[in-house]
Image (cartoon, rainbow, N blue to C red):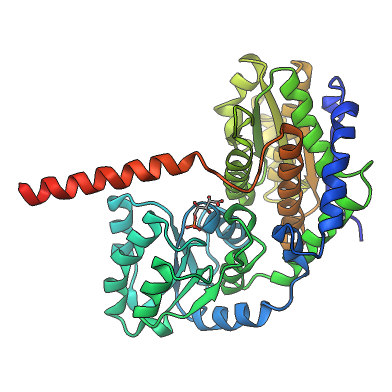
Length: 425
Ligand code: PA5
């Protein structure tokens, strides 16, 4: 079966990839040798079947609610958001009969309050996800929502927690409320967890084909590791490294697909948190075509020449509403007459890519025939591999994020200080 996506580096031809590409070989060999051995847990998720029964049973239990609130942040929420966009198009257009996934990542009291005001606890299920079981935001949300949800009945029937099998704050809280706990694979990092129960349980609740997601990922992984000369993620990582040598330290991901907008958020976290270490890394920018043609494109074309722009485009020719032939009569619109909205999207990304190339800006184009579970699984695996191969080229460890701990410690200290002030006041 052919890969469900293609990578076109035609507009990057001026950047010599051969050197960095040769340096991707050790990483590819290591990943290939590790496959199936549990050493890099994200690599082995696509082949798992042992967790499917538990995922499907929990999904069946939660699917009967009209809305599912997912509490989690970073790697514990962005994968679910990305997969859910296959159902709601990334813009909240939920089909009738499918539960609405409401992802609550933040602790903005105004947004959180509004969410609770618009939901009916009797028709709401809860999924709390935290690998460590100790993330302050997720635990705070959980404490805030449980009394509200408990009014509607026992939590054992309407809630579920995913966390690693340790004695942690989330598992203790879930235990106190008889909330079933499902296991977060202990060796799998949050931002690499989308193809585990972390992404697949929300996906299964929404009725997505979780086996196809894994099959697409397996296909992309095997193609990437089997032949270093044609490995698409290795070429992507080599391109990033080649551009860093030329001072290009910003990477823009611009899908021309609404349903891939959350994919951009997922990618930004993966890339930033995995690579931004010891002065290394490149800065991810999320964008959406055609919208950002009217927002950021001017900067990409004529601002600092420090960017790689990756366009992701789906075949959209002939798709969607066809514009009326009488538009011909209006000189300003005659170029649209008789064409479709999909044609407009198609020429837009092609014209943008070509214009960027003419301005000497490197553009990579990923094309997909269709956006379904197989394709999305393949794209997710592509970028996880590209990230860890790039980490090897940059000489950084992609699976931890030590620098963010300092801010967390300081926030706790501030909070304690606030408590003392309130007591005295
Ligand atoms: O990728 C990561 O490891 C992080 O972004 C985590 O996913 C995020 O900090 C949330 O952590 P946890 O799942 O432990 O609550």
